[in-house]
Image (cartoon, rainbow, N blue to C red; front, side, top):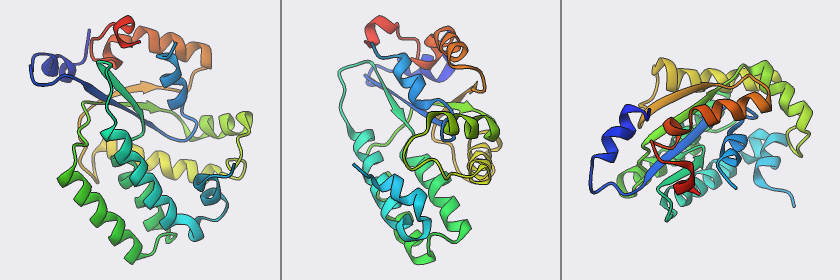
Length: 214
């Protein structure tokens, strides 16, 4: 059965597409979930190596990238996105501010830009799929997958990011949540997670059949 938010949207004639954002910690399985529904050095790598030097650059770049993803047109009934402009601001940018890696003036600029984007562009989200995983689990996955730029990510950072996601999406104690949230426990093995995604297909895809999505 589809989630209530999706059922409501399906009854709204003017709503032609659903936007579903997949959120969660680093290595929580976001890309795996997106792949489940599919038949050179970058700025993120630089950030992991020198947080203070590249924090403003990364914040600006990711916010622009997220805006482009929100605005991207699709002929499919459901658009699946990895992260959103909201998690960029409420989790990653907020963490850099509180840790001192992002100066107050830089955070103010990014916040003003974020507010302007939200006021002037359609960044609506119909559903957030939160892949809820333990920091220890994603830390081990990072070690196992050995991606460039991730090898030095400490467990403490992952714990902090976990706390920001929990505060935002579960406790709802700091920032507004832009949509309904579907929580999927994501500590299981890859094979088990694919089984879970298949079982929750209707909820994740807002009631759409996977064949029509592909």
